Amino acid sequence: MAATLRAILRPILPFFFASGVPFSPLLPPSLRSNPPANTTALVSHIDDTMGSTGKEGPVAMNYFAQQQTDFKPPLIANENAFLGDVATSQDADPKAPISCGFYRLEKGKHSFPTHTLLCLKDVKLMGLSRSGTPLVYEYTYHEMKIILEGHFHISDETGQSVKATKGDVFYFPKGSKITFTTDDYGLAFYTGQRKEGAA
Image 1: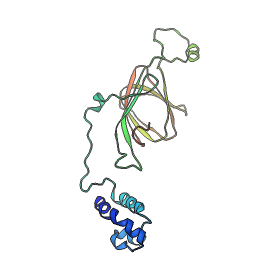
Image 2: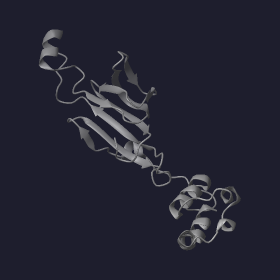
Image 3: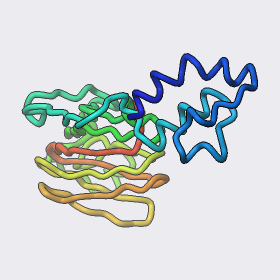
């Protein structure tokens, strides 16, 4: 319905707006009493109320086979943090897109072997940790994450700290600052309320 209305109205509406000729009989009943001010406002209203997919009838799902094993997320930070979006809704819903993908953290080079004898004071002074290079990330959007493999040490600025393992689910609210580390590796699947590639 939305696609049909757009196709019919878009070519003729500029004429009506420019000429001042009443066009309310052409509009859906919901718009007749308060017509939009211009073509862009009308098309936006049609998209908001009737959907913006541009398609009529059923909407197909999207399928991404074997992504957990086949998709290799690119390096995003340090030498050990990998993240990549697999899918996004930004074309179907540009006003409130969500994007999902995989996050992998590896031990990294800034760690010391378990057989090395260092006191905690020395470790802190040297900037080392048994968990390797941390990724500290401040969320500018809401995100959900489920741990798929391995484990993470996850902490926030409130003092909460968790050893996250397979099956654990997290919600990171917009504005939270989260530290991720691992002493081996961890793989997680996330869904964030953001555009593709905006992490």
